[in-house]
Image (cartoon, rainbow, N blue to C red; front, side, top):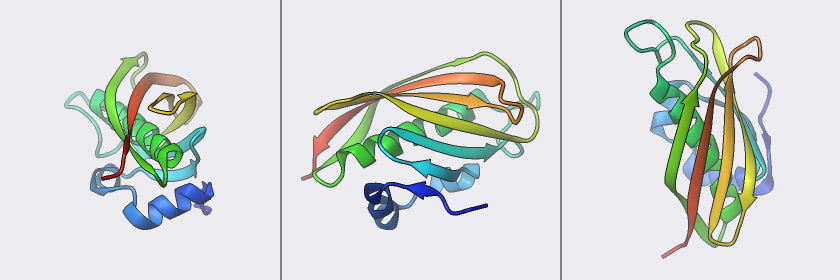
Length: 140
């Protein structure tokens, strides 16, 4: 895999915090990260529910991770982003391969950010849509 495309704030944050242990366990691989857009992949294998399809919670982990990463890039360096709402609509099942999450900023405000994340299969078919709102808190 090639080096991720990162904004300067993203480089600083990843050096300081990394992606986190949950993202590592889920196999999330970052491709692009800025406040406006974030892209990552995640394997289906190891992230399935008992019927053998990608777990709905795995969709949410990928989406919430991307939205939170992007919001923290926006907040950096004066603030930190903390998720206050996440929702997901699953529209298609996937039982193999790699899924891709593409996160797009809907609103980048002074106190809140809102991002939409589209999770798609390797054929580009939409599997789910995740939306996250983050509160931007001044660092203590």
